Image (cartoon, rainbow, N blue to C red; front, side, top):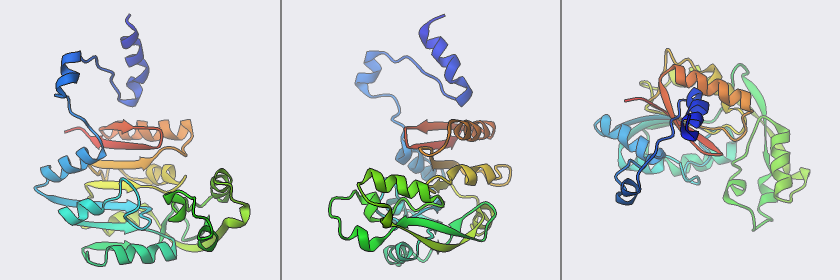
Length: 251
């Protein structure tokens, strides 16, 4: 058995296949260059320009490479953006005030709780530092886990005094989906360590978005494998890197 066949056997359980390409094919660039943007635009094209989405952990809606503002402005988008941090939510409102078709929800998504402590960096302390990455200055690591935020603070050379908490209201993923006018084309999740719980609670028999993008960086191996197997069973394929996984339904 060839090495490639052996490797394919190892990755088959995740729905992945390793294919051999000739140098001529690679040089002509005739292979599809699949990425998140390609999949979203392909789905919009299949829907004749319509786009419906739900984004959980939207932050300010414009500071991440894979934020959805470009699609919202370019297409007839309808959607729901969820962000629990009070001050960041205010920025989100300002950024999308011209799009009343986008519903903004100032809550966190939790499996069963109606209120929870959310940990994040103190914005006033952040203003004293001019050398921090964008994800830090926009408080993109807000989490239900205090240790998660402490770990990020230490990586940036910040003390634990930078960590503060907010008490935030919560809704379930089912409650969010019930507010959508239809099953979303895209479900995008960035919940800083809580992505597994949201996806584990997602009823794919009732709601099956064409594309699901989530952060896998903070999942354990067991959690990631459980979610991948769940999505495979529902007919999804995958694009993945160290940080994020994009699941998409077979055409």
